[in-house]
Length: 299
Ligand code: NAD
Image 1 (cartoon, rainbow, N blue to C red):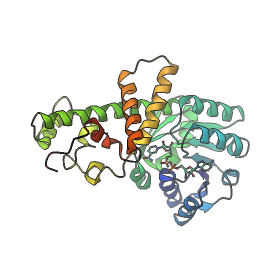
Image 2: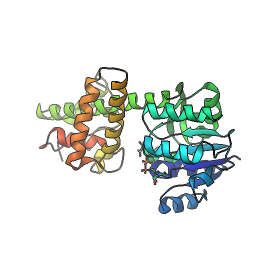
Image 3: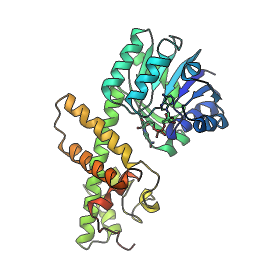
Image 4: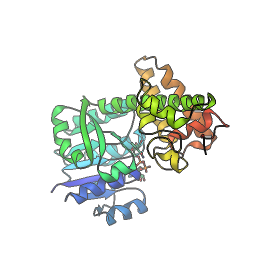
């Protein structure tokens, strides 16, 4: 049993911390929200009075925070210099590559091993312990983080050195955002051309247009497997989070002078969709903006 300091018990962190506690670890949990702390306690974690208290005497520190500024603030004020230097530091938040590298560098300067380990998979995967972790850090830091990540995920893959986990995450999500927009406009066109949408799904799933956004996450209600489209686009992966990831991808592209026209267009579309009130809907709901008058065939 290891002592783990866990900071950030929101939608994702709550299920992740619960899985570590379920595996028998001594999880000292902290969040700014009293409600999140109460939930963690009822899931078998111990409530810490502050971030510093949660990491004191920890063998591992895990953070699941909203964005880069929260990660910087928590690591610089409460983790680096407070946790024992032999603790492995694991940041699972999705943040910009530059901040991830900076914090790993600062931690290293004080004698800590740290990895960036963002996740793919939503709240259900966090609760079920079936997340995919993309990890950036030295091989040694990766091996030290892996036993903890294994308890929260079904796949734990080292992407490369510090920041590589974040780079893999934003590249993956840029592809996802662009492919979802392409899937949505394709189904709108198919319907306007008079195709039966389930029949088109059956054809394209077996043809060269096949992609995850269609076969596993079809934006059309009643077509393909059960998806957020079947519950009026509630739950799932919020358009606001997709927009956040696309913005991170565009920032990263600019920093290395990469030409990403599809990613840039997807960012613009998700920004417009969020401004029009779609931010909290699942990201596949963007089909409603691609054609304002669109209603799924047969609905
Ligand atoms: P969330 O907003 O539900 O949770 C974040 C938690 O951090 C909140 O409970 C908040 O109170 C806490 N927090 C903020 N600042 C803090 C501080 N200084 N000290 C302690 N606690 C603090 O967010 P989430 O949905 O759990 O997402 C967390 C991260 O995971 C984000 O980076 C997100 O992009 C990423 N992510 C989310 C999903 C998803 O489906 N929700 C999927 C993959 C990745």
